[in-house]
Image (tube, rainbow, N blue to C red; front, side, top):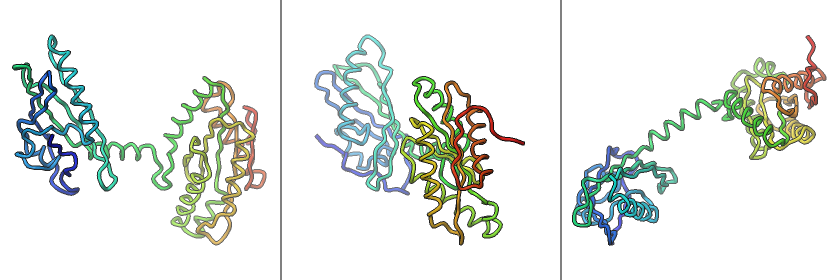
Amino acid sequence: MYQHYARPGPEEGGEATGHAVAIFNMTRDSRRVQVMDINTDYQRLWGGARDEWVGATPNVVEQEAANQQILAQLHDVLNTSVEHAFEGIGGREVSRRHDGSCRHIEWRITAMGAHQHDAITLVLTQRDVTDQVENEAQLKRLATTDMLTGLVNRSQFDTMLKSELSRQDRYARPLSLIMLDIDYFKDINDRYGHDVGDQVLVEIANLLKGNLRQVDYCARWGGEEFMLLAPETPLEHAVLLADKIRCVINTASLPTSGPITASFGVVEAQPQEAVKSIMKRVDDALYVAKEKGRDQVSPIELVTSTRFA
């Protein structure tokens, strides 16, 4: 049987496709599938000439095994739809191009008419929605990511924190929060300029990402403040993690002429604790670390505030 899976579509940067259409027949008993006609957008999407496609099996999706599975599913649906109107089937496929990028194809198959002599004529419509999917993903990244550091932003971290606090309440598992602030960051900006200050923030973000577990969350909270969320982590282990990061920052080679340090506040979530409460406590813990001379880790075990006016 003639197949087109190895035939590439248009190269990137070529003419964009609209709605690709293929009209094909399917027999009820033999599952034989044959293309009757295609439009030019189908040719642009899959490559090949019209004469090559007529009589061949249509490409619903790019992968051969998935294509055959869809056609088998279509045959089964049609056989169970004799007494009921066939409303069609559809989906979205993600396939990988030769250069490693992905292509997203939306497709739908509907009936062109009723069964005729044990066969039915069907219409396959397809649309390349790659640009739409990528634009939506970019908008989501812009809404959830700090553009300077690449970490999640404050709004997205709030969502993560609420989710993890709910999970902690359900399963009674430990959950700790770490807030860190770069010491004397204003002096860095004043002395070396904001470009160097921005580079320091980027480097600190990279150090954080490189020293956390996959289950941990890290966000730029604002200015020179960062927030770390450590699921399945009791207070004592979170303190060790914070001190490890403190030492990494101390020994890192950053784009300034002097050493950089950071202060850390650490708390463990209490049962049924509200977001506002845990955020107040970790802020208080950071304040204590600053008051004690900076470049240190300060844990707070109780819900009560320790900050004084």
